[in-house]
Image (tube, rainbow, N blue to C red; front, side):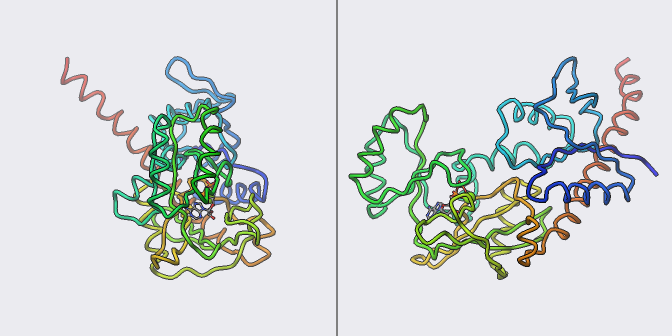
Length: 321
Ligand SMILES: Nc1ncnc2c1ncn2[C@@H]1O[C@H](COP(=O)(O)OP(=O)(O)O)[C@@H](O)[C@H]1O
Ligand SMILES: [Mg+2]
């Protein structure tokens, strides 16, 4: 049996460590060794290789990067470089896309997936924001394009509030302003997990009574929720368009337009925590199984590519001799 070695960097809080152990042992059963805790923050690049501790990253057959905390530009930069020679999950390009709300919404919209109405405005053109709030019936949602956990998101409910916000934005170094039409919804959402094109789980979140944001960090609470076929189809489509092998698709229902709207596609959707599992969220094992399949396939493909290069090398050198 061929021995493969893959690398992994996964969050350990909220039950992450137990999930990691399961992934590692299931990979082991398939002849795949896993080196864990490969945090690119501790890596350096030189002479054609990235070294993390004493591990040469380029020798890995695949790299599974699953840490929900915000990554530093350094980690992200090395992730991008590594992705050139080792299959990374998620692949870097899709990960980078999913970190940006405008790029994600734009790509989805171009592919015909319903997203919220959005507009990117030049910060030097304040009038365009005023124009936007007028067009959207006197309301808009301002969002940092790279935010998370509901942070920095502001609902502006009239033009006067916008007049208050603009001088504040002027003091920041935000290069451009991203706004969305406020969707009238029931303050609950769907989080649908897709791995490698397969549906693995669904739950919902409910905003607290005094907020319109469903994020857990904004006080939102988890609810059990069954998806319908339409939701699953939308989530699969959104995952495919973003290119994420592992995706958590957030969807709300627009009460006015009577349609589902994709709010965002998360590239590092968390597993259910032990507390959430106790509530009945039982998708972890299905998700782990799909991720293990995915890592195995990527590792086998990578090894085949490397071996082909080696068999081709002598032929090529003869050809050019
Ligand atoms: N355009 C919108 N209309 C209505 N509610 C929204 C809109 N955008 C975001 N929300 C609410 O705010 C929450 C956070 O927004 P989101 O775009 O997912 O940012 P984050 O990356 O910070 O989670 C969503 O879960 C949803 O409840
Ligand atoms: Mg969100």
